[in-house]
Structures are given as C-alpha cells and as structure tokens.
Image (cartoon, rainbow, N blue to C red; front, side):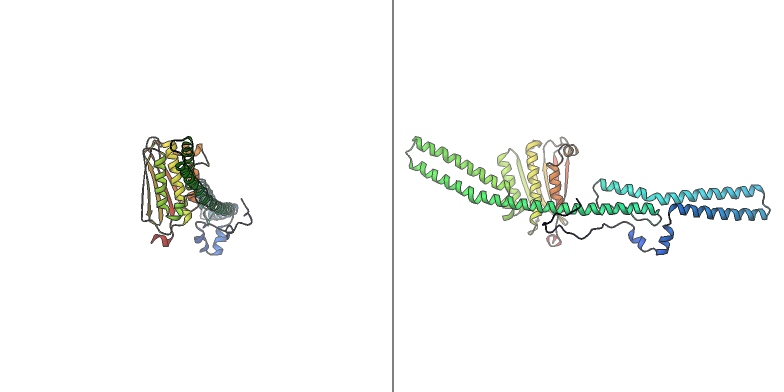
Length: 366
C-alpha cells in the first residue's frame, strides 16, 4: 500500500524515519575522517599492499646494505607477507561486518519488530553502507504504510461501532417498544376474552410469542452494541456480559474491577470489551470450563484485563496457524489498534489465560 485514499481525514502524516543505531556517533566524527575511513574495500586493499610492498622493499635494501644474510632477508619478507595477510583479513572482516547486522535486522523484522533498523558503521564498505541505507528506507516505507493501514482500520472500526450503536438504539427504542406495546395489547385482549375460551388461549399463545420476540430483540440490541458500555462504563458492561453468559450457559463468570480511570477512551474500552466477549465465546464453544474469572485493574501506565478459565486449554500456535484472520488474530489486531498488547497463555489440559493491556495517558494514570 503506497497511497492514501482520498476523502479520509486523519490519514495524512509527515514522513516517518526510525532512528538508525550508531548514527549519533558517526555524526560526531569529523567529515575528513569519515571520508578517509569510508574508502571502498578494494582501494583499502590496494593501498595496504602498496604500503606493505614499499616498506618490505626498503627493509630488504636496509638489511642487504647492513650485510644481513639470506635468512634475515627471508625472515623479513615472511613477516611482511604475514602482516599483509592479517591486515587483509581484518580489513575484509570489518568491511563486511554490516552483513551480519543486516541479517540481524531482517530477523528482528521477521519476528515483528518493525522499528528495527540496520546500524550505521564508520568502517563499513560504502557498498554495504548503501545496502543498509536502502534497507532502512524500505523499512521506513513499510512502517509508514503500516501506520496508514492502522489508522484506516481504526476509522473503519469506529464507523462500524457507530453504525452498530445506531442499530442497537433503533432495536431497543423502536422495535422493542413496539413489541412491548403489542404484548400489553395482547394481554388486555386476553383478559377481555371469556376465561378458558379458545380466544383467550389464542391470545395467550400470541402474547407469549411476542414476549419471546421482545426478549430476543433486547438481547440482540445489546449483542450488536452494548449501550451499557457508553452509559455506565467498561466494568458495568463486563458485569452485564458475565450475567448474560451465566444465564445462557452453565458457566460461572466472576468479574473483579478495581482502580479504573474515569475517563477511559471509548476505543480502549471497546477493545477490552470485545476481547472479553470473544474470550467468553471461545470458552463456551471449546473450553468446556466450569468457572471463568475476569479481572480488570490498572498496572503502571496501562489498564490490564485478565480472562482466566479452568477449561481444557489448547495449543495457541496451532490454533492461530489453523484459523488465520479469525478469533485470536482478530483480538490481537483490535487491541493493537489502540497501541495495546495481547498475550494468550494456554496448553492442553491447563486452562487458558488471556491478558490484554491498553496504555493510559498521563492524566489517566494519576
């Protein structure tokens, strides 16, 4: 992704460039010394051979004039050859050392550290330096595109939540109210009919059907978007979710919340709520657990949520590899959009712990 769609405010961003390790040290070195040390490897080897050759020739002439024998001259030449080989090895080793740094940088990026950059080197061969510089430019571009994609995804989720909220309000305030009025009218009609008559039984049956539909609409409105999350906050929303889960499933869910900030951003609260919702859904479907504990507390400069169950557990790596883009991956991405982290600890037969953490601003930390 190399372009930003038009009409999406907030996606424009100044060019980003990650800090290159070692750049500060290089900037403190005088320009003439950087130029001298940055001579290409081939020229360094040529210059070294010229110097060693001249020094060796002068040494041989001096030994010859001093009357040294053949053994002394051979020893001097051998020493010069040895020094030349050692110096060549050192020059090549130092000049190609950035290749190891490039490999290390590529490995860090592969593991998910997109802030890693190839370090600058004073003695690196210019070709190696250009390769590292090109890699850093490529990573800068990837980082910019990732940021644009994250901003776009955050906007999409915000729009989805807004639409879900509108639909939930419509279901609760319009459809549910209409069904409630229908239930009341059917009840009045049932009371007006003759007792134990066919009409009374029919009215009672239709009233029960309408009452069931009313309950389903109310539950659907909360499932589409929990209004309690906006009205009463994250802790109340989690308690409501726990009650709904306990009523629908034979599962005991305890919620413990403490030291919560009063001004938690809506995006952070929604991310943690969706993680809890998806975790409980997975527990009901797969874990066969009897008890779940949901803990919500402040940890340093972050708000942390733990969802722990006593179920049968699973292989996390195998599950994420088998169903990419679903469930666990969706939870990770939702939390990452608010600069949070998600950790899942589980193994077959040991239960599961989901740890989600979202950052707090300085005002919220006090």
